[in-house]
Structures are given as structure tokens and as C-alpha cells.
Length: 86
Image 1 (tube, rainbow, N blue to C red):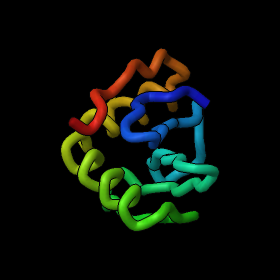
Image 2 (image 1 turned 180 degrees about the vertical axis):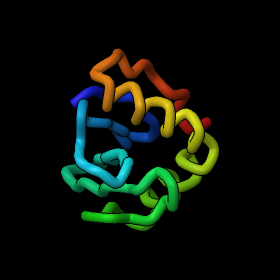
Image 3 (image 1 turned 90 degrees about the vertical axis):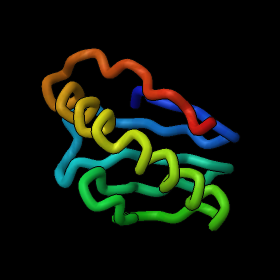
Image 4 (image 1 turned 60 degrees about the vertical axis):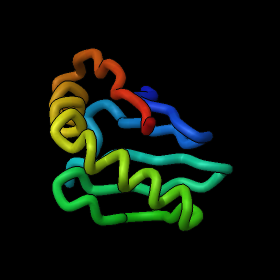
């Protein structure tokens, strides 16, 4: 699964041709959380509260880019990278 961003020990990934709804995977310290791109709701898993907050802050800043990366993944095209949380 390609990594599209990394910050503060959090790794953001997206699978090629993954199942709907459009989402991304956030990993931190052995935990995994799936977040819906359109609603930014957690759809599976969990991270510690502080890590979850950083993931959500990052996702709000990059929601449109996440939509674009999802489309690239559906089309099996290179995903590229999204800037980390500053």
C-alpha cells in the first residue's frame, strides 16, 4: 500500500483500487484507522486521541488532494505525495 504522507510518526496510506467509500488509512504505533474522505468520519479502527486529532487536522487541510489521490488509486495511476502536517 503506497504511502502518501508521513508526519509525527503517523503514516498515511492508500490502497490501489480499494473498496468504497473513498478513504485513507492512518497508521501510528501499531494501530490503524480508516477515515472516509468525504465526511472525515472514522470508519474502522482507532488511533490514540492525540494522533487522531493530528490526522483529522491534516485531512481537513488536504481533503481535495485526498479526493484526487483516491481517483488516481482507482485508475491504478501513480499516487504522488501530500504535504505533511506542519
